[in-house]
Image (tube, rainbow, N blue to C red; front, side, top):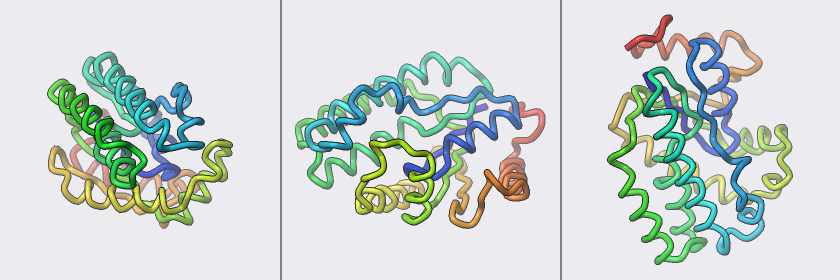
Length: 207
């Protein structure tokens, strides 16, 4: 069983991944942001380091898929490789932060690995407005994220809205991250678990 969480930077994916893994005994697979040697440079100069950073994420995400997601029956993943290509790399290209030849090279790599990727059984997407994203980014205190342009986050939100609306590979559960504080409010987290159960996933999580 494979639960996947999607959402913008600061939407609460990593926290909800941890909470769901603890509740259901799933293996958590986290986004390898801390391991990316280009990430801090990327936020300082997106155009120069966009291709390097995105290819690193793509390679690490594929490694995660092949070693953890594909071999483990019960897993919950914090951000998927599908978002890397359809949201982040696409946005960089659309805004002129990634050259056309780099985008085409990246897209070729992504399309090449796509057949090897396991499809989630359920995609849980967290919607969050710019004020919520900014507040959570400030709270987690990563220095390189603090000056992130608002237009960058808004652009990602627009692409997420389009992508999630068109996503047909598996059922999608959308969570209002502005209204549901599943970290501080136990009832909100129970609501999320109830929604997950509504898609046929309960205790034990066997499918």
